[in-house]
Amino acid sequence: MTKRALGTCGLILAASFVVMPGFPQEAKDRVAPENANEARLNRLQPPSQVMDIIGAAPGMAIAEIGAGRGRYVVNLADRVGPTGKIYAEDIDEVALRHCAERCRRAGFNNVETILGGFTDPKLPDGKLDLIFVISSYHHFSDPVALMKNARPALKPTGRLAIAEWVRLPGGQGEETSPETMKSQMEEAGFVLEHIDKSLEDNRLYIYLFRPQPVDRPSALKGPGQGQTLQEMTTEVFPPGIASLGGHRFGVAFS
Image (cartoon, rainbow, N blue to C red; front, side):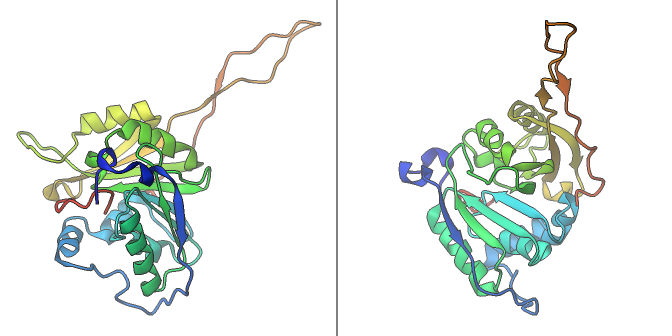
């Protein structure tokens, strides 16, 4: 897989491949890693633990940005169950076709793949309970634009969760500092609610965000014949959920 910054213009076009056949709950190996690298990553980023932290639950609609070949998609699909929905987004069409076939073989009928653009994931507006990114953020060429364009896909109570390798003091490599993450996501229109550090020994932080409040004009009122625009009011979103309840580029570490 390639970075958004290095892909061809043909990948900018959106496409969708829906996984159709049944969803046999008895298939015990449907979330198994496909190779040694996936197994290694799952040890560093235990799917069950990560999904508990981000609040993935039955019936939810979740999009994974940078879903790649589906390592986490199958786990998310299993967690939300037949009443939920997973949107697997990436800019790599070959990887998404593999993801779709992987889900078909595993019997998941609640997964849809979306071929996004470099700065627009092309997610469905207003349908998502959660947007999720895992160990892909450092690959995004313009994370602010990408996540700003992802934001309209969230429901008013929706959340954004980003699991990212953290740059510890003196560290180097494909990582993102907490300061950079917070600053960029604020620019994209999100408010940081919490950083989960339970996997810090694995160099993984999980950032939990909510959309920034939206300013809207209130109703026009005024005495007599004149009317004035009242002061802009702020829409208040519910507080963060207590228990908020891969990827584009195929490098070996992410």
